Image 1: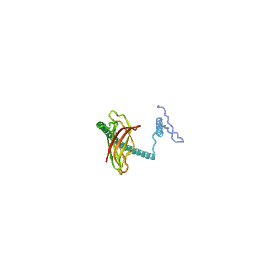
Image 2: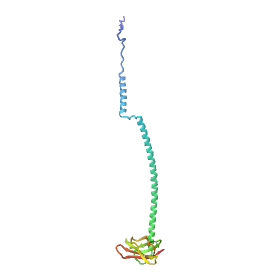
Image 3: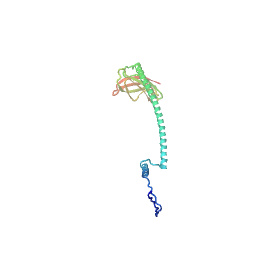
Image 4: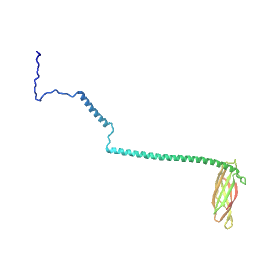
Length: 233
């Protein structure tokens, strides 16, 4: 009435009961493969292009180099501070010296004006020559003759004069005999004025009494200025 039904007959096998085989899903295989490939690629990139892993010795050397660099930095900062202080001191000294130089320059300008006024007030050479000996002083001390004198040209006649000076010393020896000594000539160059000073040894037992100054141009024996001055003892 309801039709016939077939029963499945159990068929034993030599390997036991047969079951239906289950396969791993394809998507899981692809995912695992991707994970493996990604991990391998990451390791390859780190090894090939990533930073190198340091050994213990390399790490210690790196720390040592870093400490040395910090010490060098501190040393350089200290030197920079010292050089900065030195530069500041030098700048201060330079400013002070500049101010002193300006002050000295002003004093020299004032001295030049004073000398010009003094030159105008100096009495002329009694002989009226130019150049002339405007003032002179001779002193004797322990066989030494010290001298200083002022030679000037008249105002308006200040072309460079080049010549020489001869000093003739007259005096007396210890045996009461009179005599004179010609000192070595020396050069004289002046425009408006020239202050001449110096000293010369005297022979033992010789007492200088007076000195004659003679001025001559270079290349000529003609006396263009002369004056005789007594020696102060």
